[in-house]
Image (tube, rainbow, N blue to C red; front, side, top):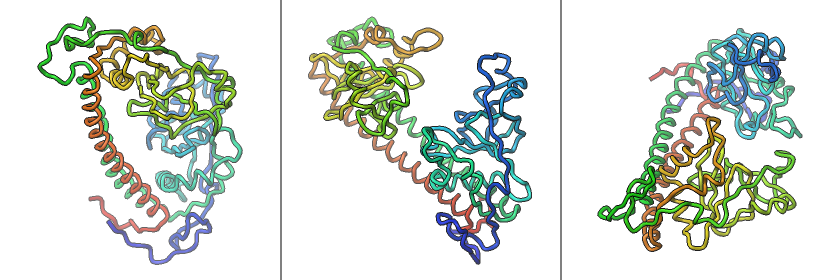
Length: 448
């Protein structure tokens, strides 16, 4: 789809913004909006919490519209803190959080809320700026604004208020802002629908991938094989010539590490790779969000060094049960207490056991074995008792060869779906950016 340009343009005075339509104003954000922050009531006073006022923090900023929050406070808690009750229609923005490494979360509250100290609310002069227009403006310039607003030298990613307040925002009149915002609401909703379809496809492929793995590692490839009861509920019948055993009998090591002394302050930008649960997935190690520790810390935690061929298993939290095999020729690494190292004995196939750990039945065992209602995670004794059925070595090799081919098919389809998502999101950002800076004129566009 092509759109017309405006008839005349002028320099914005901001290098990364370039030229804007001649009739648009160029105010600083502080002249069209007022700012308010937030605070946290004392956690030691139960009377301050679990009230009727949603208390919005960065973890709630997952959508463009905020209708509630994970935590809530009472009126007494609100009055005791630095927060204020914000009426609906404010523009909420995260100003301090690790997510600011790559994204500026921004949303409009649909209900009255309070904020924590890592948030700010912008209240716009209704005669000068429409909140929905500014929301799209931030979305369209996420990368540039992350750089322009970053607080230099901060140990945690944060937005410097003075930089935020001094931001030049090109603004047409209110009717034109409204028209642009409505156009973008319509167009982004269509793109978001297409993205959601691709994400559903990825989830379906993941389910089918796990089903293929599960059948192969519990029933084998021969549909006519004689079966026997495994004696294990989740396994059911298994081929008669397979051996039912416990994971502990196949391992020479079951153990994990710990968070270094000093916690996050001990993490470095280079050194010995330190693997955390967010790096461990069934599809493999994800090393885009990594931290490092010093050689001294690695030496102090020598018992939890990771070796090529180890199997890593997440044993706590929402990612419990995610597991992967450490590839050959892997760089030196260590792990924290949320990741368990399974080092197999010489008689066991690490590739086959790694596949078994990805099966749906094994995932069910992980879930059932967690400690109590608090779901504290898996301990080493529980891991050692996990049951599995093991075929002869030659049959293991056949199963692994089959799964290599089948998994490659799923991985190809998943990669294609992810590329489609990436392209759609690039299209979304480009369209928003062009519309909110007047590089295209969408005022006469109809919704079809």
